[in-house]
Image (cartoon, rainbow, N blue to C red):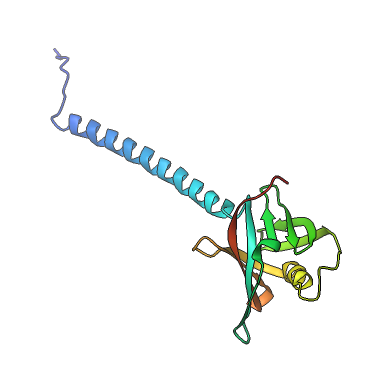
Amino acid sequence: MKKNHRFTPRWQPLLLLLGLLILVGLAACSAGSEDADTAGSTESDSIQNIEWQWTSVTTQSTGDTTEVPNPEVYTLNLYPDGTLAGKADCNNFSGTYSQENGFSITLGATTMAFCGEASLDQVYLGLLGSVAAGGPDGRGNLALESAGGAERMMFKNGGPSPEP
């Protein structure tokens, strides 16, 4: 005659506890992964919806830096849909940008008023058109570089972008 006993070893509650801890750990790792993904997208988005004001350009071969006398009239606004707008002294411009394979800017419509002999408007637009890399500099600023890093443009945060 066979007896039907239920056999529960002492370690079964420990296995159940261990299984529960593993599940909790996996859930925490998954939540951490989502947080890391969110942090990554926040970092890449941190350049968007900000009115960037051009403060300087450095020529890497010579180390010469030109400070921009009126950063508030040389702006760049990058929007989440890949469009951009800004001011080049007395002129306005628009266009598109991409962060794929570096950083590129394609200028579109631009007003062409004469802003004066001392204006850096044409220099600014030329530099923007040659951007090949860029992003946050880790100190709350934006850095954009031409191909090979020949010129490095620095921008400071001028507050929220106006609506496109």
